[in-house]
Image 1 (cartoon, one colour):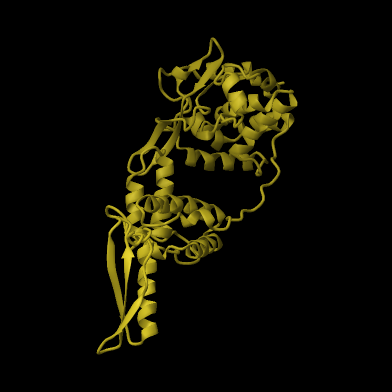
Image 2 (tube, rainbow, N blue to C red):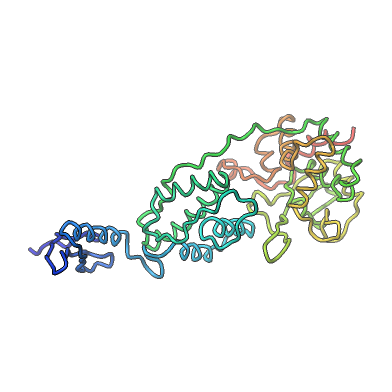
Length: 386
């Protein structure tokens, strides 16, 4: 019976031989293609030669790799291959990933304005050097210099890069999976407007010339009547509004994409695409605006899509001028959810109204989604003029 073959990724007995300049260490190694090859390294001493050989075997054991990605490929190259292969991500997600790559991983982008420290980079590391410890220290340093949100997004990007390397056998595992958690500041308890405060806010902004010139009173009223996001309100078109039925269809959201400008893209999830019943006071408000075919209900001052980022700044100024400097657009959404909760409506109805995906499989399978009535319209009547 013949000698059993070496298991893949293992080596046989190390033998050392004296040379004119020191020693040579040699052994047989069975590569991941099944072939047995002789591997050798030299050193000035016997121990040095053996150590050099074992180090080479260790790196060889981290896999030769396939295609253009090997354990010696630099992170920079794999990052670009990973990003080029993204197909099912939204434009805003792709832009966020690209920003993380350019600023903190491959270093191709400009230094952020006002940065307190230079970016932390991994670009020139080889995949075999991308250990759990290296990644962990990188993310901790990134969180310290640029905040937990940036570190968490970088972790997602690195996980994708390392996952691609692992699928090419250039890494024996994805090191990102075992790094420590990125600690974030505990979230504050949700704060919402009371019914009286919501009415006061809607009244106050009508006396703000700046807010009126930017068409914010109706925009704020619409958000309080529906609970939609800023981008969804900006993307609302007249062909999605049925004033006779008193309903609106949330189909898309406005985003700014580098090189393309403002675009209206379909909502990110199935839960985001929904039809909502409007309270009567909102129907009357929209009826007073008139209709404009398929154009946006809340267009920019000069026409076209309203920029969500600029609108966010305009809202912040309007809220401050009205004496509600703590209010944000998210507070308007929380107000809608709170009003529904106080009216005895379920959290499922609130999730449908706000466009949140419900994790309960039973509810998802046995209860219809995207229905035109969640009960919010009746509850939100309370926000209308007294």
